[in-house]
Image 1 (spheres, one colour):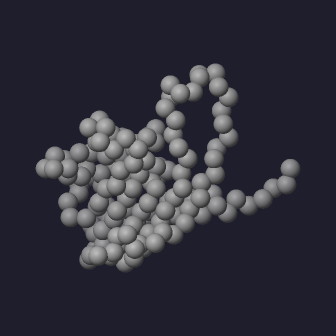
Image 2: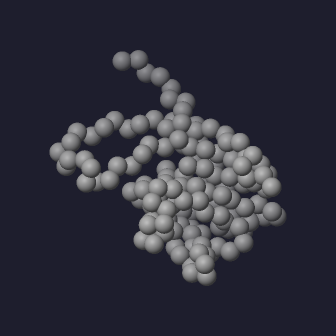
Length: 149
């Protein structure tokens, strides 16, 4: 078997590391200037933790905005937790980096998009089914046109 360098996976991990680094800085120092983030993530990811009413409202994907009001931003190795305000109701969220589909900072026209595998419901797969090999994920820089004012 010939060994090869998996540049797609390496880039994917590096881009998620960039998000982690940015969020660590925000957790310590707050948001500078006009910076703010739109983060779209897969609510079906097995490690995503959100309130049931949010999961019912956003059964596949959800976009959050980190801008004016947020608290308890805790950045870890595999994901981050944050409390955001939904209609005057503070809700804690945990978002694994692997669940993130897009990360955009429109104040500086920066964005990342990740192509991620779909997550099957546990009841759809028999317990004795063989494990599927992990799908490769692709990452790319996204156009910010849809967030321009």
